[in-house]
Image (cartoon, rainbow, N blue to C red; front, side, top):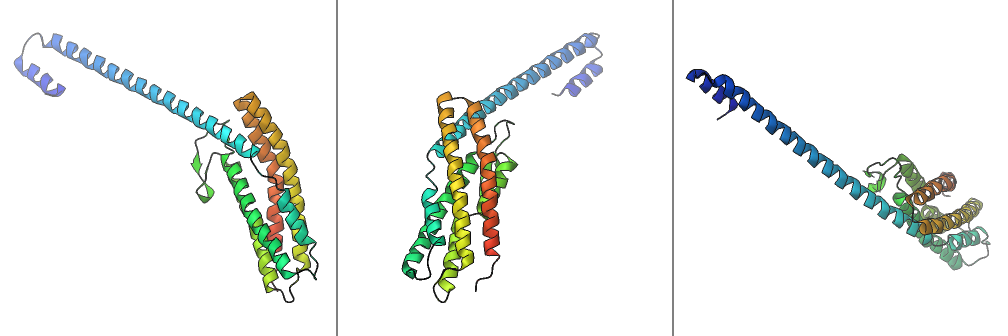
Length: 249
């Protein structure tokens, strides 16, 4: 029976105590509503605390992962040396040896780009307590700056530069590397040396953050990474776009 049915029944009965029963019924209803509201509020607060705890644990995990990835990043110097060797190749060099250098550049460039993309994806910004979002290339990130760096890393992919250089060399008759390719390889090698210097500095900060075991140190590591990496990624992207804009003869 609903509250409306009860009120109608009391009105038809004509009992004099209906004036007393109605206020009692309303009082009970109000109390029940208040209890339900309090219970619901408690559940919301408990769920909020649970979500915050999970987010803090997730942030701590990604902080640790990013720090570890920085420390374990291989040196970029071997790839820079390969590109420098390509830039200094002579017209009289064996095509087999030149192709080996180009293949090595493709292989190492692919690994390097994968490492950079991994670092960028784990460089989450936790200062604003933002929720992770699905972004470019189905990656999970928390800031637009990450997405910008991710796109720059794609545009400046060393594998792509080496692949295009290999294709140009394959098409060349006679088998010689053109001046544009040699210059591009030298420019990329210089940027990789700069990147090596940047990563050496970041590794030192990562070691410091590991000793501190403090989220503030990890936040500063990520800030430095994004700030220091952006100029190199921008120049690599510009170098590749300029090289690719030249027609293959």
